[in-house]
Length: 410
Image (cartoon, rainbow, N blue to C red; front, side, top):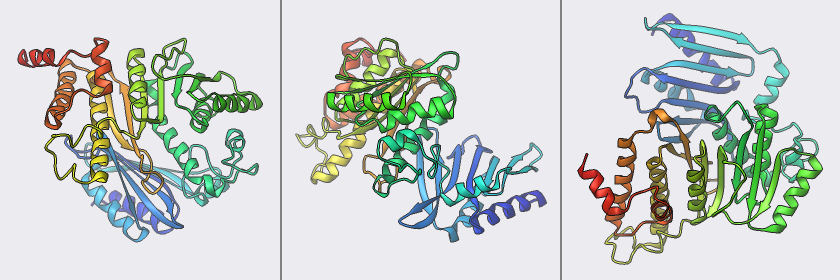
């Protein structure tokens, strides 16, 4: 290691050992074939103990590991050896940016944070949330998550973390959304609308970007309650409607479609609507994936996967979401399956995040994704699931025989 690298490692080690680290990011891997394209490190509190969460991101997935403080420096050293060009460190006292030059020398830039009290408060909260704890937030107070003093109620802290985590996924790809007009957003199956209000807050208050949001739910009483909260808070460009996901007309094509825990094939309906609208970004956290599970075990020849109910259920859920992600790719979307929230908060913790990037949309990529779907179905000996059937019925996907013909021409 060079002298500058030693200085960098000393800064990283000191931040961990002193407990002042707020966030550490490694990006731009040195090797083109590197397994991870980005690694974020931040402190989290689990059952009263501080851990350092390493969120390692590939091109399609994100993996989380929670490391004890006494092993954190060792893990950071291992990450440094794997090779990244950019390192960003934020502590309670300063922010540091390190860049590796073509000559393999590190250039460090460091600045003191102007508001020490604010930084310390952020550190005391352990996690630097987009919507911070300790600062009163009107919609969180109205929905019962916060007290009027800004404290998160203990029985709602899991929901508070869920909301912030979801906002991070939006904030990460907000550059894909239009910036020359209000962003059109639909939240399918909004329920009590914690997330709908949070997304409105993210765009209006944090990002300072105009938006128009519709929250849709089949329960009219829930919709009435949400519209009441909206009116009391005098929130503009936000409305709630009752109705079914399939066939919903929003009045304009949404840029961002959200579906959190839409049950079973309702997730497929939400994905289908977003594909017909050609929405720029789609975020779906599926729930109760029963369709495939009900078909397995009927001569599919998959023991021991189908010998135990809980194993079959989990296998069916993972397979269903993998097929959904691949089907999004057949329509030109760059798609990732990410961990939404830690499993100690909810077992329904996978997020399908899809966004349109023309640079990654090619006929070969679409055909490869469709081939993957057909192959897994052939192995399972099952006919198309709901999303594939919907795409075929609207002509957005060819029939099975047409797929074979397309493959033969390649």
